[in-house]
Amino acid sequence: MELYLLRHAIAEEQSASQPDSERRLTREGARKMRRIAKGMKALGLKFDLILTSPFIRAKQTGEIAASALKLEKRLAVELTLAGDRKPREFIAALKKHTSAERVLLVGHEPHLSQLISVLISGSERPAVAMKKASLCKLTVGELKYDRCAVLDWLLEPNQLAQLG
Image (cartoon, rainbow, N blue to C red; front, side, top):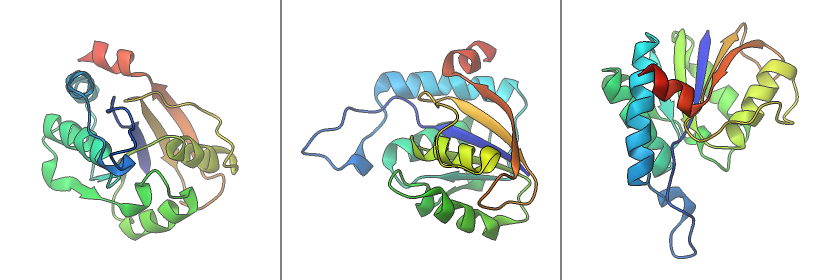
């Protein structure tokens, strides 16, 4: 399985009057994400499935990527990608999608870094840092909560935008 992890783009600052789950992308964040999505398209990326956190900023990021890649029908919300969930929960949920060979996950930090670390090293201690709108590719053998993947690459948002 090829597993791609995309951190959401730049979002509104957190405020006491708004739940974290309702923070939206800023205009700048959406603009940059459109450029990044063009870079993803230039790389020739194709996905069987795009799973996004239910948080609005991640859904918006996933929608922009899906639109640029003409994969809107492959986009779905996955509750275990929410910023307050654990990698073990997500891995169990992803096992339900065994027919998907190339999956894009859109989520949050530190959840994504923890997930990457579990899959490449067996530990939740983050071994990488994902900037907003960065994209990581892992090649996964048998999906499990332990070392089962190889880190192929991690591209920062500026690198992706330059490709587009």
